[in-house]
Amino acid sequence: MFEADHFAARILKEGKSGYAGFAAARLLQDAPEFHQRYGAKALAGWKDNLAHRLEEISVALDTGHSEFLLADIKWERLSFQARQFPETDLAKSLESLASVLGESLPEKAQASVLGLLDQARKSFETSVLPTNSYLDPAKPLHRHAMKFMQTVLDGDVRKAVSDLQELMTGDTGPIDLAQGVIVPAQKEIGRMWHNAEATICEEHLVTEACLQALIAISHSCKAKPANGKTVMLASVAGNQHDLGIRLLGLDFQIEGWRAINLGTDMPAREIEAAALKYQPELVILSAALSVQLPALEQAVQGIKDALAEKAFILIGGQALSGLDREAHLFGANATGTSLEQARDIGQRLLAGVNPG
Ligand code: B12
Image 1: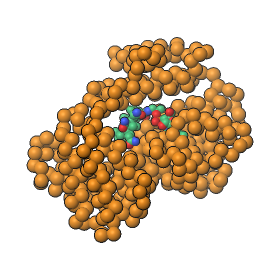
Image 2: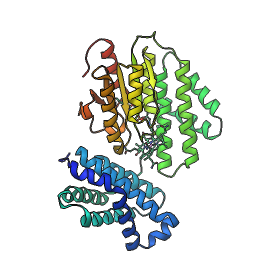
Image 3: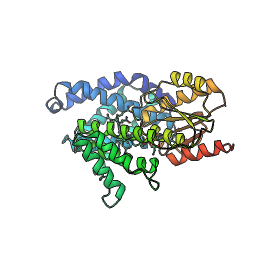
């Protein structure tokens, strides 16, 4: 953690398109081989890439946390490796960015921005290795995940889903099945796509089948009688990931909660309107990437405006890992990154204990 610099964060956020355009143009001028390597869209592609990077740097400066930025760069280095593009191209792009920002940022904002970029460039000194498979053939449920993926990729989604439903017995409940089979299959196909071991189509097929499987078990499993409480869930604006909130929603439904799942990419004002309509006791907001943290903050504010202190606001998701000890981040009542944390808060709310 380092000292946040909100001034520099704002300048980068508002100027990202211009800075990224200049830096991409300089990059292609200094490294003409990029034209051949990245084709006709080289300039536009690198401009988008650098604009995204500036957004990440801006969030890092706002929160005082650089780990997301470094994790995202690592993620991109692995993508480059897998697709046989030189990782050094990414390092060069950061150099162009640093040189443009060094010339154009107000002096007051320079030290923190250039310091972060320097840290990012130094991260290339440590090599990165592709992630190993999430699936361990020694684990029975993982073997089912492998079979599920194979059946889907063979083109029989109905069979893949019904085979999975048959595994639901007294010992293996819907959440065990989701956590033991569906989530590992989803993570594995994501990893395979990232490592260029699966195509985009294969990734989309399995991702869709995972969602269908979760929906199918949601409708066929038993739930406790209604407990009169409502939980509302949403992935904040910009967040396209929804398996996590679907899984949390299912866990609450099984416990007898009414679960209102607003789904992905939900703007703060829509979340606010839904909060007024459904009057939830608990709101769960999810963010997957650091660049979604400003949207998360806005959504928390919107719910507080709508419901004052009436709803308990729990924020989480992968974007919060590392920040989950900051319980009241963005004005929320609690921060968490796991299903178990959300479940625990739900149980305490049901018992009339303030979990905050
Ligand atoms: C599937 C997937 C996608 C799918 C999502 C489809 C869908 N309908 O959900 C698609 C293809 C759309 C996608 C897109 C992208 N993705 Co993606 N994706 C994944 C993947 C492979 C699986 C996600 C998943 O479903 N996991 C299973 C669920 C159950 O886990 P979960 O979402 O984390 O939720 C759990 C917990 O986090 C927690 N939780 C979640 N929300 C909340 C909220 C609260 C309050 C609490 C308490 C807990 C909680 O509970 C859940 C239960 O365990 C992950 C890799 C991974 N290992 O997770 C990457 C991953 C999340 N994606 C990533 C990236 C980078 C992207 C893209 C930028 C890729 C790209 N270049 O296009 C885009 C960005 C899209 C966007 N704007 O949001 C990165 C994020 C890294 C980071 N933190 O910065 C990951 C981690 C991959 C990686 N290894 O780096 N992705």
